Image (cartoon, rainbow, N blue to C red; front, side):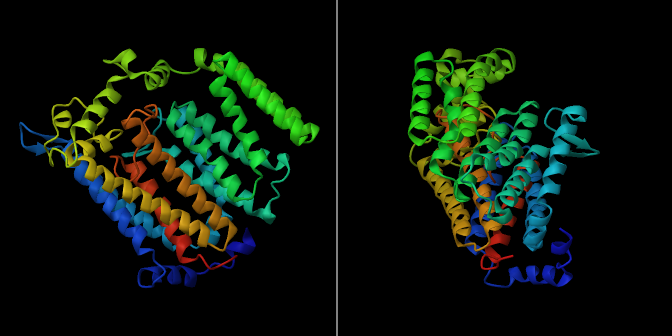
Length: 420
């Protein structure tokens, strides 16, 4: 680490600052982010607007303030030399894991209070986990043809998953788990090994259905017989899947909170609890469907203004957009997100440095998962997990973290032809 950091100088920071006047700045990505934040603030204003008083609450003003702090964080992240992110990947990961532990010991559920400031360490942990995975997979072009090479990065992911799940925050815990496949694939892992990685998830899904579980076991044994991996690999794989199959019913009965069970059950059938856990999804669908092609108009959403739609400015902000701006407004937001994801993937493809490319893939995965799950839960194809919609949902920690993420992508883009 000393040899890396000793080569860093004030000159490199000055060179990075020139991004603002050079063609190396990804204007398209930055413009899309600014547009997304603008849409978010406008929608938050509408969601908090009261017909009777003719006034909106001050949460949109807070979001503007958080956006300003977010742009400062973006600029700082852009000008930090990428060598520092590589050099301090393990340190930053260790710090965020420590903060996650402190949340369980000293914090208020998912938050750590430092004076007037409320910090949500799980948001920062997403980025540091991407960095530590990219660093590990980059070191000496890590060989992923052997299963043993997967164990350390899986542990890197498992630690924050367990800590965040204990807060409890199931949605954020899932974000960490989704990082594994794309980053391993980008690092050169074999498709067979990737299947082995997801086999415990298949076992978990089928654990409550005996015939489906038997089918998965037969499929797994058939693949093992055909491929004939090493005895160590076979033993570990079978033991892990057996442990998942045994533990799943126990976790459901003893570890999941009642509200988490209700969310999963109402995801499968919202009508089983129309006035309880399924109420949010039902009202969200009504809001989306009532928007039609062009929407009811700005500040004119009845589901929103009459408070039928819960969590309007947070989890279900996309429903507000659909109700007030209709299909055209929803389509615009979707195109905006597709463009952002396309730029993130393009940056990963264009980047010469392996660490930077893997980092870009990990960051793109975080964005995609948040977008897919949040919009999916508003239309009822995903369970309600509380994952925010990037750049649109109200919240300081989420917005600042997303701006750091974009700042890192812009930094990688500006240095895409450099190797170190």
